Image 1 (cartoon, rainbow, N blue to C red):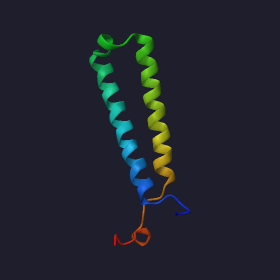
Image 2: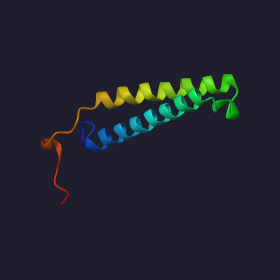
Image 3: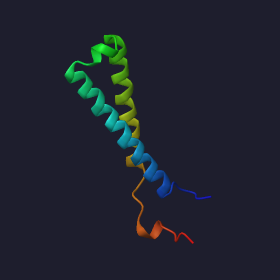
Length: 78
């Protein structure tokens, strides 16, 4: 078992960050278009935006914490 997070965690954290950022873009567009009013009350939408922004912040911190894998860290597959 590796002692430090390896390339798999790096890839995973960057993918989740990408997903969180796409969600933020989606909710921003929903707000700007006014379509959010068809789906949410003002309070519910504000809470959803806060949750999305918190998720982006957490995943950015996690993605920055893990250094990018260098070629020395990679092992052959077989």
